[in-house]
Structures are given as C-alpha cells and as structure tokens.
Length: 154
Image 1 (cartoon, one colour):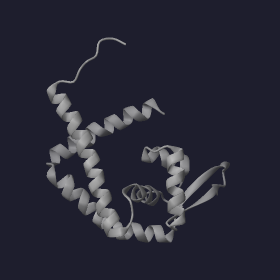
Image 2: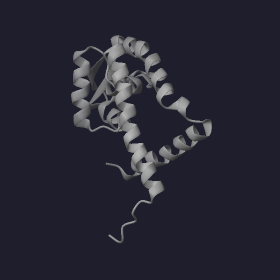
Image 3: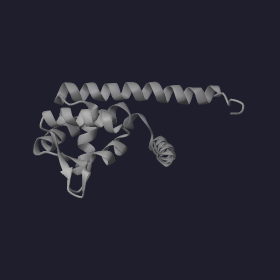
Image 4: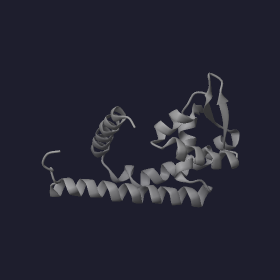
C-alpha cells in the first residue's frame, strides 16, 4: 500500500471546510425547501433531474446514477414521491425488467413553485459569497472529481 501521504494543514483546511460546509449547506437548503414548500432537498433533486429530460422521464437506474444514489435508496424515495403524486413509475417499454420514473403534473407544479426559493437559497448561501473566479475554480475542480469518480464506476 505504500507510505501514507498525510494532508498538509492547507489540504486539511480545504477538506474539512468542504465536508462541513457541504453538509451544513444541504441541511440549510433542505430546511428552507421543507418549510416553504413541504418538499425535501432530495425529492427536489429528483424533480429537477426528471424535469431536465426532454420527456420528463428517466430509467430508475439512470436516475440513481445522475443523483449519486443507490438503486435501493432511490426506489424507496421514489415510492414515497409516488404516494404523494409528484412522480409515477411505469414499466420500460424497451426493457420489461426496467422501470421508468416520470414527473407528474403535480410534480411539475411543485417544482415550479419551489424552484425560485431554492435558487434564492443557493445564491444567498453559496454563489453570492464567491467571486466569479472562485465559482469557476470550484466548478472546474469538482467537475474533474466527478469525472474521476464516474470513471471508477460503482
């Protein structure tokens, strides 16, 4: 395995700040969405991904990948969302073993109502605190991390 390359003080600051700030940011955005629109951040993220598809639907396995979720966790989440009437699941006509998650009209309506509050929170708690240069560095850096993780697979 080799010798451990321990983090320097600067690297530790970057790592710990990222970990704690990300967790607290997600908690804050979740609380704001929950209080204003009775939707969790994770449910909101499902709605956003489905809305980004031309036909407002996506295979569950692809949706799980796009959300960084497991198929099992996503299945439970989508089941709750289905009970709430904001998504529905239908068999994949091209693969009888597959299931497609689809945004319902109620889901589209919820997304339209919640999106402005979410974007306002993202701006207030992250984007507006950073310079355009910092935004570019973060975007480039984490795009590279995501690409690396995607190449590793599950």
